[in-house]
Image (cartoon, rainbow, N blue to C red; front, side):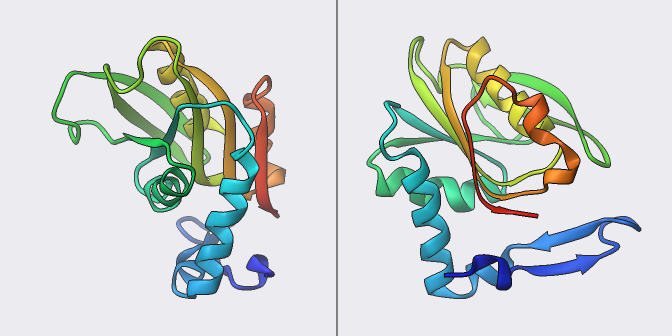
Length: 170
């Protein structure tokens, strides 16, 4: 299926000069949503890993069905103050701002192997922060899989050393 043709492009959102790639149109078409999840699951299916990591909120949308499909656990990475137990926090830069993410300190056991699933690779800041959180609590990042990659923003560079898959590239 040509997922790229289904994704809606919105110019000047959230700021002038940015083209926002709206994945809600993929979610609304059952065959497209299934195809997106299948592509992301297939990208990591043959890897040796224990758990899927997904950042709030669109990483939840794709990460949980990938985890279910591959019979793996799912670990949410959230905005500060959303997780109820002891957390580890990481600050990072976005293409148009700064943010923070948290993970439960016991979400990954020492030596566990993780894949990160998210909707978008832009500057790579979010995924880099997640990878660092995973490593700081004793895990290993095996691969990172995205639905969309915005190649012009150079996110792969900040993620050098990690295996990266993108289903769609702009």
